[in-house]
Image (cartoon, rainbow, N blue to C red):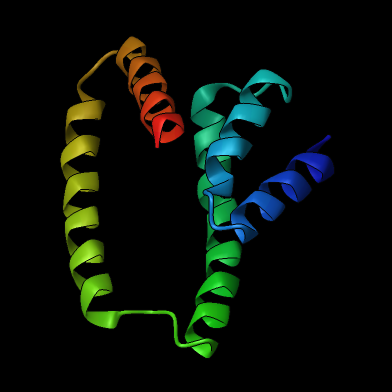
Length: 108
């Protein structure tokens, strides 16, 4: 199952649509992993797939480095803020946040 999940997430990731969202969904609903383990697994999945995507986009001159710097800096800041809040919240809120994220993602 993991091979199929990885392949599906990789294809979606290659389309630029966020393969991690699909991977978390598949691992949680069909892979039998908890949401926490699915998210952790997704972080590991993200490292090699993002390196490949960065290389291809750099080669095709599709990266705005100035914009990327701002997105990275404030993305890390937002991540730290959410991690600190999430560390003090209940597991229920984590599930709720993921539901809102999926809703927002699919509306776009």
